[in-house]
Amino acid sequence: GDSVTQMEGPVTLSEEAFLTINCTYTATGYPSLFWYVQYPGEGLQLLLKATKADDKGSNKGFEATYRKETTSFHLEKGSVQVSDSAVYFCALSDRTTGGGNKLTFGTGTQLKVEL
Amino acid sequence: AAGVIQSPRHLIKEKRETATLKCYPIPRHDTVYWYQQGPGQDPQFLISFYEKMQSDKGSIPDRFSAQQFSDYHSELNMSSLELGDSALYFCASSLGFAGVTDTQYFGPGTRLTVL
View (cartoon, rainbow over the protein chains, first blue to last red):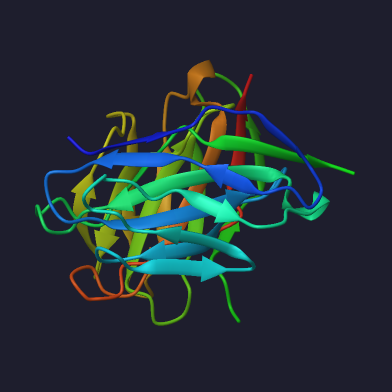
């Protein structure tokens, strides 16, 4: 079945540091890939997405590129802020295998940014 | 912009009681998904509906049932509650089960505590 593996947290960075959160996936079909962010006590917010190989999703300074050859969708940001502190989930949905649009999530990576 | 609405936001029940969670999707969205997120866990897919018909089923216990109504809102009914049912329950909506747009937008969640 489909699965998502992302780097374990927590990740602690200083403000303005470079961020990378690794995400790799296994899918039998041709999935769409997503990054969701969850702030403390809140729901999941879509951060960015990519639907085909070599697509780059971007939002609020965050970027991720759909790499089919390495089955990866790593999240990057050039300069993090304290307000970026949250849990980040990598996820996929795979309609091509007839399994519907359900999202399969990674285990989440907690990011803490300090002054 | 209108978002997914879930009610109630918090719910406290005793073991063996029943609970009903409600979800109102974004206007014009015809697909609803339910996810369960245990403490410190990633969200797990429970069930989804497209045009009032069940479209996919995940790890939903037999004690739970759900449906989507003519106005596209959905309800998750949970009976014989167990301590392990304590979790954050998310509803998400999207436009078009088999369409090009497969992005799911999440509600704020209902936090269920079973005592």
